[in-house]
Length: 331
Image 1 (cartoon, rainbow, N blue to C red):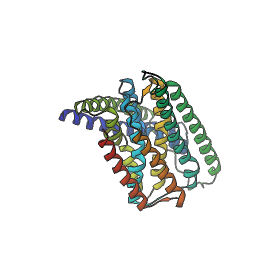
Image 2 (image 1 turned 90 degrees about the vertical axis):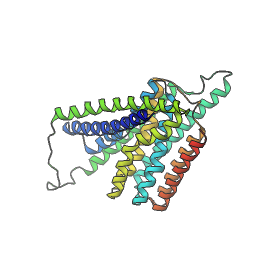
Image 3 (image 1 turned 135 degrees about the horizontal axis):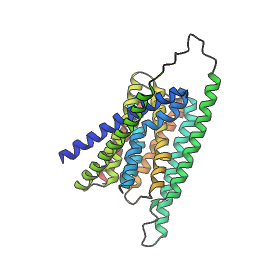
Image 4 (image 1 turned 135 degrees about the vertical axis):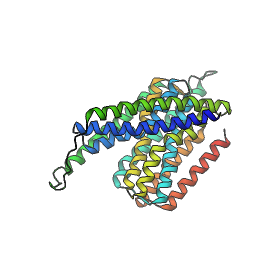
C-alpha cells in the first residue's frame, strides 16, 4: 500500500513537471512563428494548465475507469473555485474586470449549466428505460455537443483577442518594444515532446495506482477522482494562482481558474464522452450541487463589487472544507 501511495505522488509530480515543459515548449514554438502573446495565453497556456486533468480523465476513460474521469472533472472545477480562488483571495483581494464578468464568467456559468443539463438528461433517460443502465450515461452525441460549445468559446476568444491586439497595435513606442528573442527551435521541440511524454506517463501511473488504492480501501473511483486526484491535477493552477496573488497579479489567478473550468467541461469531458460513453451511476448529485453553488457564489461575488474580498475568500474556502466532509461522509 505504501508503494501505491508513493507511485501516486510520483505520478502527480510527473504530471506537473510534464505540464510545465509542455507549456514552455509550446509557447516558445508559437512565439517563433510570430503568434501573439494574447493568443498564446488564450490557447496554449490555457490548455496547458488543464493538461493534468486532460491526461488523467482520458486515461481513465480509455481504461474503463470512467468514475475517475467524471469525478476528476467535477472535483477539479470545484477545487478551482472554492480552494484556489478562496486561498488566493485570502492572500490578496482579487479585482475582477468587466470583461471577466461579462464574457469569461458567463461562459464558465454556461459550462456548469450545460454539464448539469446533460447529466440530468442521463438520469431522466435511466428512469424511462426498464432494467437498463444504458440511459445513465453522457453519450457520444452529448460529448460532441460539449466539443461544439468549446469551439464556439475558442472562436469568440480568438475574435476578442484579435480585436484587442488590433486596438493596441501601434500604441507602443520604439523604446517600449521588446526585442525579439530567437529561441532554439530544436530545444523547444524537445521540451514540447518530452513534456508530453512525461505527462502521459505520469497520467498512466496516477490512474493505475489511484484505482488500486480506491479498490483496496473499498472507495469508489469517483470519490478518489473528486478528492485526491482532483486536488493533485489542480496543483498547477493552485501554485500559479497563489503565486500570482502573492505578487498581486490577480488577473492571472482569475483567468487561470475561469479558463481551466471552461476547458475541463467543454474540451476534456466532451472529448472523453466522444471516445467512450461516461456512466453516471456512481456520481452523487452532491458534486453537481456544490459545483453550481460554487460557480454562482463566484459570479455573485464578482458582480457585486468587481472584487473577491478576503471575507468572501474565507467563505469559499470554508465551503470547500464542507464539500470534502460531505463527499467523504456519503462515500
